[in-house]
Length: 139
Image (cartoon, rainbow, N blue to C red; front, side, top):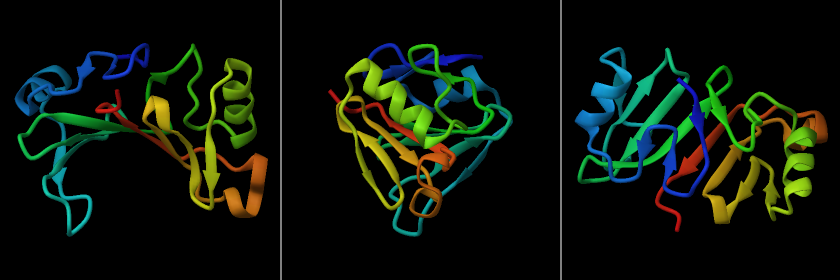
């Protein structure tokens, strides 16, 4: 299944506010549910076969999705996850999209994108994007 990010609030068939049971019907029963952190208010569903985690709000509806290397995430026909920071930076520059950077990755606030690039401080442009969290609640 391909997860094209074409519009804010949806990625592929996953839509902000979608009930957890609908997600499980769509993606299948091969998942692990767990709290990402001790302070988390709800569990996430980890779909290792899809290389993604689905995040839910307190009402058990979709609020975000985290994609990992090997997932079928696409934005403007680019995978982004698994690419170098230089490739991602060039893609956003070409599209005229503003982004910010810190010691952990890059952020595109208007699209709800947070790229986890753990080696960006050491490897700079050659650091690999390990994951992308997509906040589907961004308007």
